[in-house]
Length: 410
Length: 229
Image (cartoon, rainbow over all chains, first blue to last red; front, side):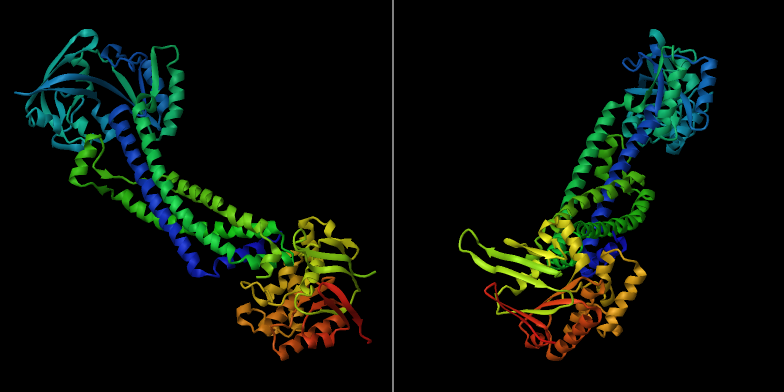
């Protein structure tokens, strides 16, 4: 088979009607850019939701008592012994780190208001490494490990009519039914990006939270933060071995938040359906061109076959022509789409006021993030390739079956 | 042994309803090196006969033997390959590939035969020179006159040294000068390369140059005249 000849014929045929080829490649280009934007925005918002959820909530992994997942009570708090903690740190090394947490719901009161609130006992340095909460400070200062003070979300402060240095009273239930009550001055107010947390958040230093809930240094759970989900899965397997024979377990964030996983999957499917509709429209455009290119050259096909070109070689030539148009459009779409996505990745689009409030209610930050994940580009490439392969069935079928003599007489 | 034999060849359209005979019991032999024209009025079966010999059409009954091979016995793919290696075609309307230059058009069949690129180019250059188009190597068909296009078509048919060339009214679209020029070229190649030519034509100039004239009427052989040398 003379590949040079086949490619030469395919390439020349592509440019025998430059305008038509450019319009077709152009329509693919715009479809790819549009699909890239849609996909990038979709994946970007998922990444943001997952990132927020991991950084401010569950972490990639969580070590907890086996009963804690079903009944998240402080009664199932635990402490790692020195050997376990060392083994854990040794295991995590550079790819991940562990953050002990104390979390419990309390009643929080100001001078005249009382609200339900979430106390999170943190080690400020690790917490900041995990979620950069320091960046959200709007008033006052960040906690130190030995502080007997709190930081509160601006939403909670507003609801309780509290300001910096005012006193917050908390009352709740501690370890094994002990009473937990405390009175703390507000050292800092943060404006948390997730509104539902901002409205109920109280940060206490880990030691102080442990004292408040009478936990004697125990943690309700440990969060493990990793570089990536992939490395988290690897770490999970190793921690599972470490925890063998104990009452503890390590859970992946997908196990901890099954509803989130389902919601994201549902959203992803909706996005894919939109993209599918877009691609169907484009596919018909490409098919129109391919159909014209095929039918207008029936006589030429007949000449080639009568001269001695085998039909499968002719089919291959038609196949390559269609693939080349697709590659041109997809390639140009990705090349031109990348800078656009890069710009929006670095400069997410802020949402308008009404929409901003709405997304905050869902715990999302009020801007449209764009992802640069390789899957965004790979998916478009593969989708277009599959579409093109489907479209090529027509010229391939036609070149394998057209009547030679009838077309030669045209 | 004749290079081409047709035996009791029939081509009947609408055989089940009102049969139309395009060819009727046609048995002909063509020897190597012949310069033959098939003549007859429109609808007499000239083109149908050439299509049968070229394996482009299938007879309703009868056989076509090329160099002893019954082409009806070949599978479709093998028949295309057989055409590629044995038959040169010259069509009335040139039928050059518009996206290829004259040189590339002439090289096409040799490239399909996967011949060595260097010898392919050399042969294409040689044949184009023989047909007087050495200065039009890189011209596309749209940049050539009708006569020049037909000369490229002849060069394409001859370049791969087929066993014979089938030419369907090759001069029909050419002016007198271009037609004579083309006939000179084909006659020269017939003599120098012993190439077998079979033409269908209405053109008196072609008939005059032919050494054998086969006349068809209503699909049947009317006269088979071999001129004295």
